[in-house]
Image (cartoon, rainbow, N blue to C red; front, top):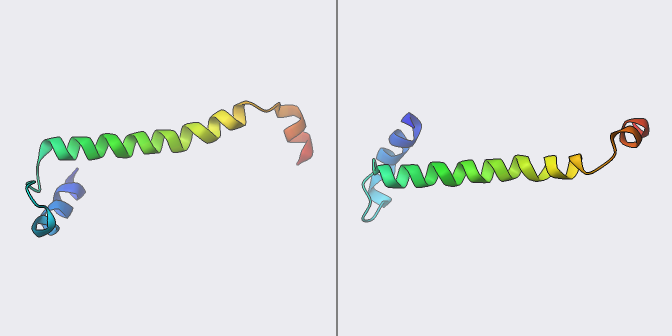
Length: 60
């Protein structure tokens, strides 16, 4: 959050109609980034859990 606030101050002139420390915007961006991170971790884990581990370990 401190980095987001510092970055918001740096980009304050490019934010039209939104304050650089708007809590709604910071919360929305944080949730969006968390969702993308969860999907990026979940999809490969789901794929890896669908294979049988014994043949996969013997192949290496």
